[in-house]
Amino acid sequence: MRTCSVTDRLLSLRALLPEAEFIGADDIRPLRCTSDSRRVRPGDLFAALPGDRYDGHQFIAEAIQRGATSVLCERPQSGLSVPCGVVPHVHHAYGRICQALAGNPSFKLKLIGITGSHGKTTTSCLIASVLLKAGYRVGVAGTLGYFDGQEVEPATHTTPPAETLAPLLARMVTNECTHAMLEVSNRALAQSHIAGLRLDVACVTNVSRDHLDDHNSLQDYRLAKSKLLDYLAPEGFAVVNADDAIAAGYLRHFHGPALTIGIRNPAEIMATPVEQFPSEQTFLLTAGSETVPVRTRMIGKHHIYNCLTATAVGLTYGLDLATVVRGLESVDYVPGRLQRIECGQPFSVFIDYAHTPDALASSLRALRNVTNGRLICVSGAVGDHNQPLMGRQAEKLADCTVLTSDNPQHEDPREIVTEILEGFQKTTATQVIIDRSEAIHWALAQAQPGDCLLIASNKRIALDDQQIAEDWLYAQAEERT
Image 1 (cartoon, rainbow, N blue to C red):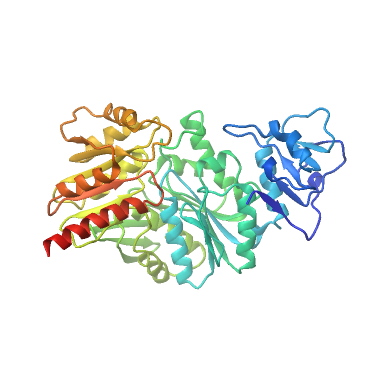
Image 2: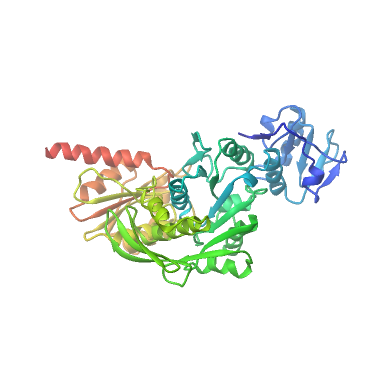
């Protein structure tokens, strides 16, 4: 959806945006708004959003020709035939307008925002499971899709843009959701997708060097992540990872209520790893004076952190630890997040959305801890500035690496593989097979009992990789019988 609207009352932009300068009218009272000039309908407010490739100011004339009766922009426009509102930051203003036109649905939900370099999707699923076990009705917006309490639609973005997010939250309210999970990407924070929202809980899972594409520096990226706390309601809670120095540092400038989680450093909610196997792990969960065991089929220390964050959210809502644990243990897997492939083979196979150096390293370390044999990694050619770092992590942590194509878009996958190889000091344990199906088949054929194969993918839901692996494994099983 590219248009946001409401029909129960007129919205005053002068009241909503006191920072705005109005040209051609004392006020603008839109019924609908859009940022896509191609979708303008007569009577719409057109928001001229600056973008990566295009600047919406270039399309103001087209929007007016299509029937826009007002314009929102950052630069005064000469000769316009319709009223214009000029604001310092049109993305932020547009987000507030979209939410207001939708009736400010976040004010009627317990909205939980989750940001971080990694773990947003899994943490969102865990929190949803905990709340469902407590009897709440939950909506979700994130990488795996948008669920409004009744229907699921595919995700176009990790965090929907403002004109999609506002009506989605409004449908959650209509469908009687009590709580909503919202994954918040760094792009969404940089472009104010969540402007106008009021969060009940804000979670910061971790902050690493990954995902710098939308920022000029690491410092800009860190600041962008910290902005999530600015959207908390006055009584809202922050949940922060005390073992992540950058995330924990946000609390120095935050004066609201907060809960910290950790494994190494002292925190309100802590975990002690006990046992780790390829198929499950157990840890002790401590909150206050109470300690309970948690047994989960998802593995890796990073997953324990995700569980701790979900626990903190559950405790924020007054749930007992028994209910929280039932919710955590109910999540057997999250698609593409160290998802285990079981077809009766005598070795382990995992698929993971490990598309950045830190994510790849985290997944390989998790698997190394539960692998007695060799660790084999199939890693793709994505096409970004992190390729040598991807190679460095693969060489350091895997026994054998298979480099292949992985959604290279317009770039030559062979050139990308060459960039990845720059991160290797030696290539003796490296195989290059550009065809992805052939690469997965080759890696599976090399695996021996006790080995572990990680298929790292740039796809958020790697259904193709899963199908390729399962078809090969089942075919081998039939040959043996």
